[in-house]
Amino acid sequence: MNPTDPPDDSWLSTAMTSLLHGTRPLSTLARTLSCVIFVLWLVRRRKNRTQLISDLAQVGSSYNAEYEEDKSHFDIIIAGGGTSGCVLAARLSEDPNVKVLLLDAGQSSQTLEYSRIPSGFGRLLRSTHAFPLWTTPQTHASNKPKFWPRAKVLGGCSAMNAMMAQYGSPSDFDAWAQEIQDPSWAWKNLSKYFRKFETFVAHPDYPDVDLGNRGKYGPVTIGYFNSITQTSKAFVKACVEVGMDWTPDFLMKSCGVSRVLTYVDKRFQRVSAESAYLTPEVLKRPNLKVAINARVLRILFDTKKSRPRAIGVEYSESQKLPPLRSFAKKEVIISAGAVHSPHILMLSGIGPSFHLRVNKIPLLQDLPGVGQHLTDHCVVDAYFKDKTESSFKFFRPSGLSEFGQLMKAAWTYRLGFGGPLASNFGECGAFFRSDDPVLFPPKEFHEKLVDTTSGPESPDLEIFSTPFAYRDHGVEWFDALHCYLLRPASRGEVRLTSSNPWSLPSVNPNYLQSPADIEKLLRGLRLMLRIAQTEALNPYLDESSTHPSLDHSLHLKSDEELLQLIRDRLETVYHPTSTCRMAPLEKGGVVDGELRVYGVQGLRVCDASVFTEIVSGHTAGACYAIAEKLADDIKLAY
Image (tube, rainbow, N blue to C red; front, top):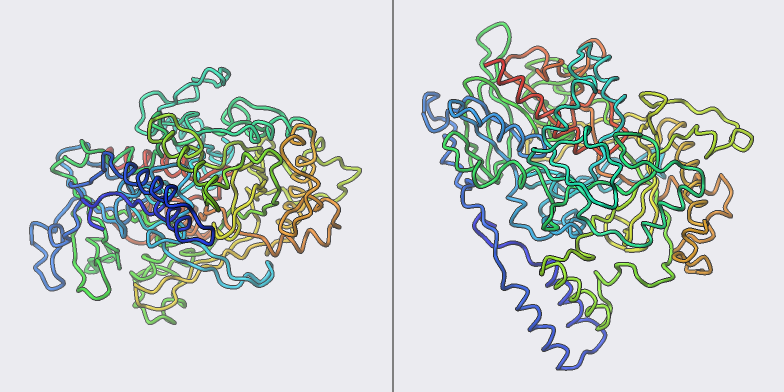
């Protein structure tokens, strides 16, 4: 799809196809009506992104071109247009004297209806707009490989996540500062960059949010514009019923339960890094070029001096086409995410020397930490039947009645009233500690678990509710509660599979390698099942259901049975971090406190891969903040 193409309407056409060509016959009138509605749906204002560059020859030169070729020269090149990359491109190009090139492997997310509509993102996970990664078989999780999609669109994972604006605990960032011995990363200093990217929109139903903690003028809207179901509201009451504290804002109190703020704007559309930072006005800047469908293959270096210096990048639209090159006078910043940033470094000769030798890549800089320390939030789900039949299962209609519900929801959304399509699914969340004596009385839970949190007020588990949940990344759909591990002790790695840059890397998150992880998930699962049986949720969850796919009797299982269920059901929540850690070199670090890659000049990394440790929340906010900070640091440097 070119940047001027209309948005992807396949999500509604899929529903039409399943209805009109399914096994249930429809009357001619109903089919006609459906087609009329479908045509009317398509008659709407279309997005286009004409300022994006799809002809890569406009910004790059051929492999044998002279270095001095003007069109391929920039001051700063950003390799990867994900969450952090979009921030850097917009902020660094604010100086009209700094020429910036942003390269991304995918297309604009703004042309994808599935991305812009909050409830549509699940359709992107198994599409051409995501890298179809699979983990190695997970030794401690029933030896199963896990599907591990990573975004392949401008805006990165901010364009296909659940839009939950919860940033972790302030002590998470204090721990970063302590590890790197740089106070600028402590929460008291870093928090200004969270406020810098935010525009918080208050809601009369939530008057207790501390406005002093929230931003007013940033490009990223956060608020309560997503829809919320009665079941999710009951979930909050259920959590309080079992002993959790209610919190008006997770920045005020990290542990507790509340409705989650979301990256959804007043038009009920997703706010991604692309939509927030790469606005039409920003893209008009003559000193900023944004090239799409440009997959970065490696970093180019000048090796004439004692320390190699990054001078450019090599990239291409396709494996069948010759690569192009662009050159950077000042810096190259890799911002390709926790999988692809270490991949690019290793393809460029920066990484563990033994591993590069095995893959026949010439060594530029031996950095053993590249690709190591991979950390991810993993999740276990429990499935339930909704008594009220008010779930969003009509998103995949099985007959005329449900299709009618879908069309009503579509028109409600298109007319600007939000409704079910404005749901981000993760509507409410509960953050808590696995050693909380109220939730886990010591008389019943005797074992003392390893504390992996960043501080006494920081959580290590989260439970969230969804009105329409999935199994196997959207293959099957249920109502569900989800428990995931916020501070795992297990560590994995990203590795090359070959020296071919078009070959996807090997990913091994090493789930449940640490026994503490599965013990914490067992406690979280037990608590989640208690929550499902509360009076608050009794009007909504049908405990009498005996359907074999549902879990209304799961609380009767033994610990051993639940441990095996955890191993079998464990999946990713799409939050990989820490594969290019900001840490001292002697502790496996890859970048220093200014995100400069050790041992080379002119090269930085900025994305979730640099997280010293994974945050006890959702990762997008920290990706925005670290990019805002780096942009300011680079402006000061030049």
